[in-house]
Image (cartoon, rainbow, N blue to C red; front, side, top):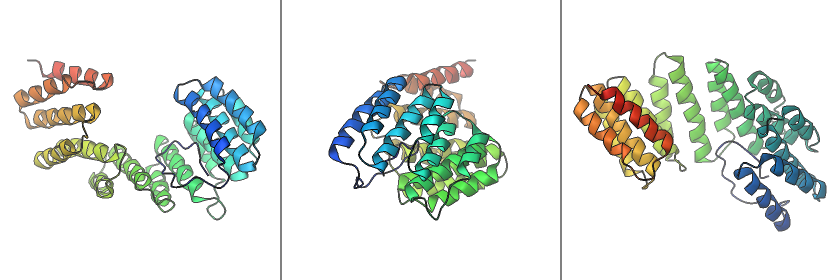
Length: 288
């Protein structure tokens, strides 16, 4: 099935129930979601569910309606819509995503307890386990979060999904503040997978920052050189790489080269405003 999943999931082929007319209407609803018109999207998908010819179509439409309602800050209404989903795994899965959307971590863990690996399809098991990993991480249960992420990898063949799980493990390891070997190993796994969608670039960028903090500046610079090769002319990653160089040079005590890198980052055409704001702060910190 096609699912409204908040993780990187590759859809290889459309399911049998995804008839062309349903897919076309569904795409119209997704345009409303992407434009942030959550109330309109919810109403659209409720109507689509009412006209759905198959239980799978109804489940899909109601799941989108519930999530759009949750994004519109209407938790109880979203849960009521989830209760109307005719397929139980889909209903339980949607509730977990609603709690993920609204950052209700304890409630998410309770909802995810209904996960049944014997009867649920992998397309639902992976994101539910990843949602549970996110909740455990937010609650400081790092061992449980890591276990969920590792288990999630067993239920997906997508390299991007596997990379997302390793990224969760890397972040949790860094948050624990203990031995960073586990974080470095997780980043190495992400890079080995060579995922798409920015995951490779993210791994190189974050690992270089960690390596620099650990005093391994030469290896950090090597990661940034690899990131340079993989920016794909994306202003976000070009700016990120230049900022990374600036961070490493600053950690090395070379303020002149750090300032030069930050100044170059500040001039990247089309770089996201949030990155440019961060560059300005870094430059300000370097002033004599």
